[in-house]
Image 1 (cartoon, rainbow, N blue to C red):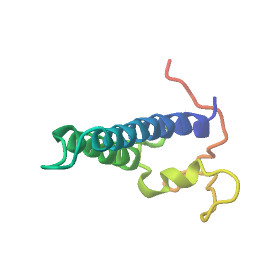
Image 2 (cartoon, rainbow, N blue to C red; image 1 turned 180 degrees about the vertical axis):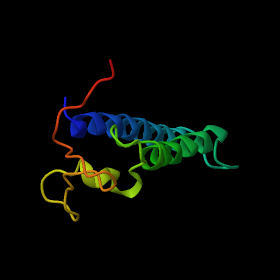
Image 3 (spheres, one colour; image 1 turned 60 degrees about the vertical axis):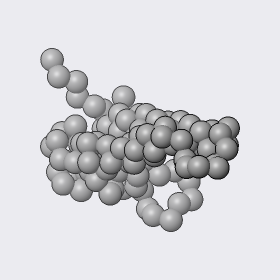
Image 4 (cartoon, one colour; image 1 turned 135 degrees about the horizontal axis):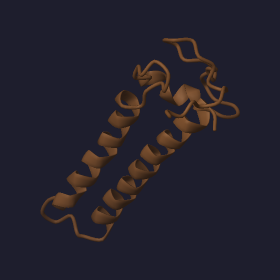
Length: 105
């Protein structure tokens, strides 16, 4: 497993959690009438969505230098035609993201 694969899996988990929370927020609004206010779990789903984004931005770290990758997280895993170029190295320590992930012994 390469470092890019490791980071891609972590971002995918955050993305699936956020996508599920968006679906839950949409379902909570569509299944209940909006006569009074939004259901309280709508706000809980929104907090989960924003929490997933914050985790992806601030808690995903380079396995080598342990620096949070922040806004470059999604540029690491970009595929195909995207608006930003994919980066192939850690911007902080310079390790190639395509080299094998070293597991601790």
